[in-house]
Length: 103
Image (cartoon, rainbow, N blue to C red):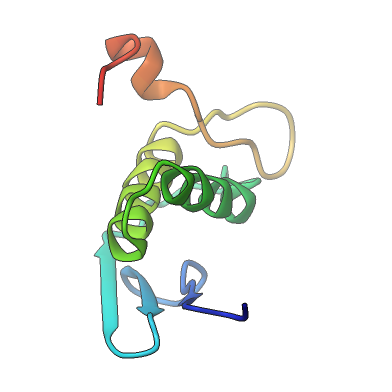
């Protein structure tokens, strides 16, 4: 029981988007280039859901965080300029481009 790891998201910080994972023993840094868009609505919820789904499939915490970071980065990169204000990310970009992939 209890917290086994923590992720600090730094997506709103200046410069590259760097997230830090601490698993109780080791620090991991995940860095991607900042994407210049206002369409980032829902990124935190998307990230946590992506991590959780990977953990449920038995993936290690560092790998789950890396895959979630990659997924959210792609969704932001191909975000949708819908309506006024902050638009949504494109959660289904890879599905539209490549269909369902076996893992």
